Length: 584
Image (cartoon, rainbow, N blue to C red; front, side, top):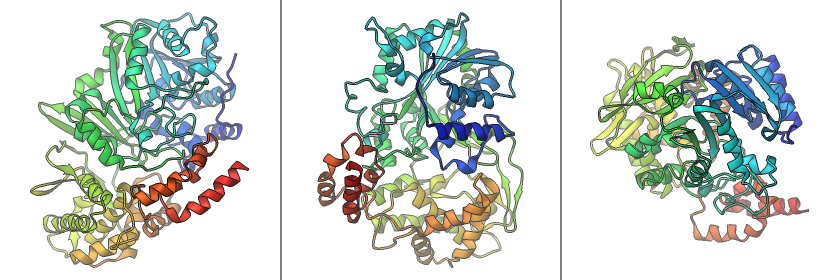
């Protein structure tokens, strides 16, 4: 018997149509990438889904995936494993999965509620990706047994004696939920943090609760990983050893992309970057990770676990990060060499070729360099100054960074032109310390060098997208920040040329639609900064609280209006009107 779960008939039909039209179905293929503005399309088709498992070795293993959905992760498993068997609860989603795997022959599956499935075979690996949390809704038990324990126990029963259960799930105490992110399944604020309502619903667990649940049903050795921003579309995977041995660097990797990767209502209550750093330094990042990837065994000495983690052991790897939306996706592996962490870049498919446009000729540098542990990421230093509105110091630090670039990387023959390898010399690729700055991760080189004013332009855009900027007396848009930094450092600005170079760079390297790149950059460049990114002013907080009774009704917490509440007090009257319309 199937289950009554759906992303929506239209959404499922769209995914099915796009899969039928796709010529490349591989796990690295960005199928219909130009439609990723729609969350459902992105979630089911993005190659980012498989980043959750790319560090594991499934060669020669037999895998059972329960609740396989539309095949977003199934595709990777079928490519890597000896055999894949899937169970999916709805026919519409199984049809999409079948289309995703249509060119592979090592898989089979059925449409059924897991509770009704009879599978006699045993497997090396059983997978529950975003499934356990729904057990209370779809598992009906008459003996009073906990449905969450029943599901895990049943999954373990399908394992061979030394098999491995792989489970991914949100952390109900994830930092993003404290920061104002809606609970993923209910679309409401703080439900998981406050223990969920009493009625049946999707439920997630804290790290301790998950460990206790696994222990109660007889799971043995645990191997923990922490995906960021979450397990759904992970950009980075951190091992427990990385978090324990290098907490500050782990936090920097974790916050390299925004927690807000889904179109759910959210409040920015505080800085993700700064809070994650403090949480990591306090030894709490594992417990407050946004989600978990956990490997559990039935025995204390599992050969399957050894096989799955073979690459990790051979490389002595601690963490992995991914650049998935490039024309040639790249994996960064963080490996422990003595007391030093080495960061090496590896193409996931093909090595990036030389890319040439009208103004740029770009060459990729395959880097292997030490992870810098002396000092602080420049983005973190700038974020702290912006968060506490120390704008004079913010600009002084930015000035120092640009002047350091000018002094250290000046082209030998051309004024205000930088050396070829400076394309990626960004605030996100720089460490700030007492002696000055140190750059890293300079992947791309441009033949003949690059204009300094373009690099300033790139950093102004990076500041807008990666920092918590707000309106201040010095600048109100990224364009104004660019012009101001050029003026303060004695560099001749040329916005049109900088826009031309940046558009061409993004067109050569990324999966963005060429026709949209210039307009997107221009929009970001001219977009006014918010009065404040966080509700830190007492008067504003008092205004927001006036509307909390409206905001906390189950219906209205799903409203997109809620996100605006803590950002811009002049819009409060409009928000109130919108909330009242929803009430009617």
